[in-house]
Structure formats: C-alpha cells, structure tokens
Image (cartoon, one colour):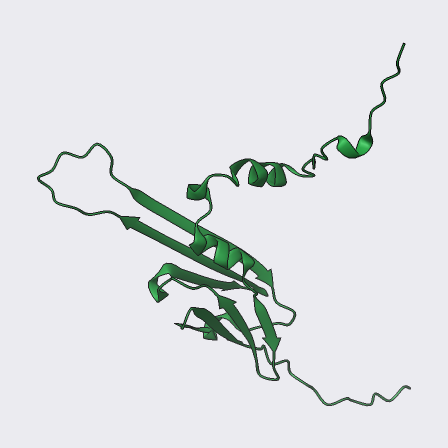
Length: 151
C-alpha cells in the first residue's frame, strides 16, 4: 500500500477578498465596460492638498473631462468633487438600429480639509487635465491679551 502525500506548493493560492467592495472589484475586473479609463484615471490619480498662509489649494488630476463635467461643493471644512459625463452615439436617423450605445460615468470624492475655510469665496479652474480648487482660509480674529486685575 502506498501513501499519497499532498505537496502544499502545488496548491494554487486563492486570495479571499476582505470586503464586499473587494469582492465586487475582483468579480467585475474582467469586464472592460466596468473599467472606464476616465474613472480609473481619477481613482488612481493623486489628490494634493496644499495649505498656504491665506488659502488652501486642492489639485485633482482628471484627464479627458471638460469644465462642465465637474461640480465642486464646499460645506464647512469638507470639499466634495463630483464629475459626471454622458455620451450618446448619434448616427443617421433613417436607419433601423439593433444596438445603440450610450455611456454614463460618474465619480465623487469628499475630503476633510485640515483648516477652517471660507467656502463662499472658492474658485475652481480646469486646465490641462487638472482641476485646481483654491479656497481662502478663514481668518481668525486675533485679539490682544488682556490683563485682568484680581481684587
């Protein structure tokens, strides 16, 4: 009688997803229609927050968009950047279509800013594939110290 042994190195290692989100990413990773380069570039992009003496500058690389695709919202010390784009294939109207393609893509990210800001004076500009948002800092009233005489 021979004994069979199992070599652990021959067993394929299967990575078990840790979260539901990871499981969905693994499941849909093989389908190109779920991986738009427009959205992937934003997710892999680097969001930079620079705190200056008078303002806060947030730069967000997002190639392939237009200024009208963005919605920037500042509420309190939070900034929300939303990007949305739709495209429709418009062809000749006289033809009978069996298939007609449309696409809709959206992205949203909210970030807590490290300092107090004045959201009403925010300026945003989109140029060369980079969204730049400049938010003035909230000026705190610096009051002179007062000496109080103790009786």
